[in-house]
Amino acid sequence: MAIGWWGGRFRPPASLLCVKAITPGVSAGNPSRPKQQSPPAPIDQTYKLKFPVNAVEFDRVSKSYSIYEKPAHRFKELLTLNRCSFHRDFWALRDLSFTIRRGEVFCIVGENGSGKSTTLQLVAGIMQPSSGEVRVNGRVSALLELGAGFNPEFSGRDNVYLNASILGFSKREIDRRYKEIEDFAEIGDFISQPVKTYSSGMVVRLAFAVAINVDPEILIVDEALAVGDAYFRHRCMRKVHELRARGLTILFVSHSAVDVKAIGDRVLWLEQGRAIAVGGVDSVLSQYLAAMTEREGRYAAGSGDAQSLTTRVEPVLQIPNVDHRHGDRRAEILGIAILNEYAEPLHLMLPQSRILVRMSFRANRDLARPAAGFMLRNHLGLDFTDIDTDREGQTLAPLRIGEIATVDFHIDIPEFYPGTFSFSPFLTESGATCDWVDNAITVQMARGEGPVYGYIQIPCKIELNTSLPTSPHNDERLEPEIA
Image (cartoon, rainbow, N blue to C red; front, side, top):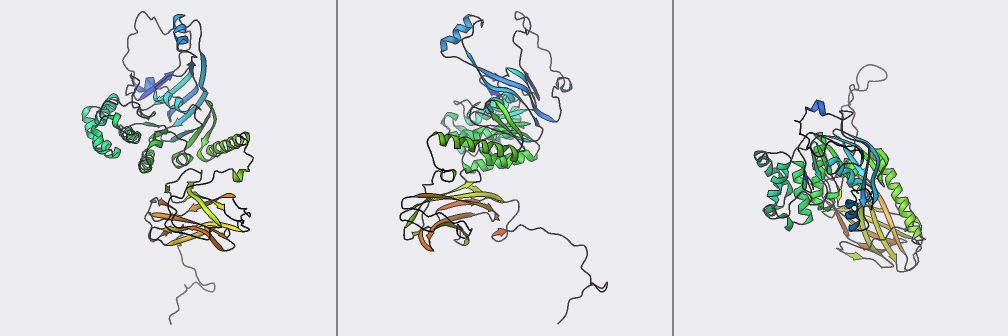
């Protein structure tokens, strides 16, 4: 987490930041005489954004790092006053141009090493570009590297006051906000303990609580939230939605496609420091996920895996819970998992979302007509529905003894009432039960926008008619018959 203080550098709480690369060989003034600092100019004179509607602008930005093979090479280069080069340049960004409009959630996706963190650090003002120009308008609050900006020897309370002070807040202002920060972090008495005693999740809790309570105009969130537990992640995502509704500009980096899809307005896909695509969430994410799937397929083929795409999925080998189990065991269930539509682990089902139920099983005897499915139950044990391959018209191929198969069920979840729901997987062969595991896995249903009366909210379209139908023979309205 970094809020205004990075590596000993002071970031002034100015509302406008413009970082421009200095062309090599151009003098910045007489080095022997320090340049006198001029008073800050009014906003209308220093405003350098090309379009006022934008909060961030990148104009052909490139960033390189000097890579030295040995530490001594850096010293040699200094001795020659940089006339001789003993390093090679690594370009983290190349000719990157994009804009972020005010009030939008702009997400960045890409593999590790694609330049996402470098982009965030340029926006936060931690470093300067090697070429090009970065223009930022607004107070920036950033959650970058875990624990960055926190003094590990100070208590959580002291770090709150330190970070807010660096951003220009008075002690009275911090006192007024402190209770909200403490309540959101929910770390209890640890707020008075040194940060070095915190777990990584506690650091994230405090960092996020500080970042959202210092009135930022631009909030930068790196992968820090991935460290938090499921409960705190859900609270953070709800808070992000609130900030989005208030018009805050949010720059969000995540490897979770479902998080990007849930909160993003536009997405930038970075690959080796270059922009591959930028645009709508669905369009860019589809391209990105397709490219990652293709790359995974090439890797599997290169590693000597000759299996087809339908069997390349790793089998699920864990059954989280077994209340009761029965069957003749001609085949047995190896594991079951509940995933989101991007095959990522799911701990909370959202209304009107798509989930993936994956189950793996092994044949202990030859099976001519196997079938797989599961029963969905609520917390009271009421059977909501059962889904199986035969019912859906999907016939599984025969299995020989020892063979392992994995089946994916893609399900569109309606809006259930908030509560826990269990999945009980089963296997059959020609109508006989081979294996059944009661309540093998349980998932929580999230609360929707409105209350749900009963068990399920059925999608409904209502039209209000302004007139009643009339008789085709006259203009008199139809009267109900009275017995």
